[in-house]
Length: 217
Image (cartoon, rainbow, N blue to C red):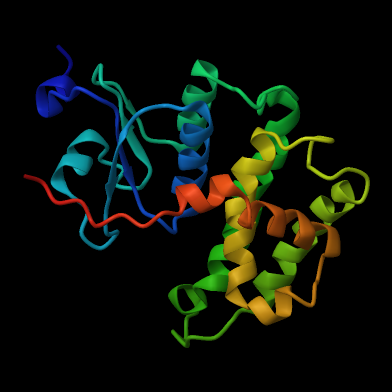
């Protein structure tokens, strides 16, 4: 018996999640499409439950605890776990080696600028709650690459949505919501239409269902 089995003694998979976190969103998207069964435990980021911290001391969502006691606490790995079990819409078809550079751009340099654009007061030495347009501009330089891709195909890897699209769009959603009127101009017409397609999809509506905050028994 593993340490986590002894801690949890669970009979099903458990997902610790926070509704608006883009990392948690993409994990829920893959779990949903794969048909994986799990217990959803919604948390508050300011009051993380002890059971989650015991399973994953890194203290960030999502955290997936499998019924056999294994813990997966990176959203990318949760997506892969789910889709390798069942990938009914062929999200993995384009090949990870082709998709991963795009995904890493969004969760690397783009996320760096997104955080400093959205949460400017956390990073500004003045502490003022103002939008940092320099980081918005830097993020836009990256988004321009995605806009170029979408001028020639409806999705990032071709004619059908893939792992790359679903792993990326939650972060662009977060960027778009910082200054929605500005984004809706639209700044990037192809990327704007691409994002709206996902935001109005049935799967996104499903995974954004509201859950009460989980309380341990």
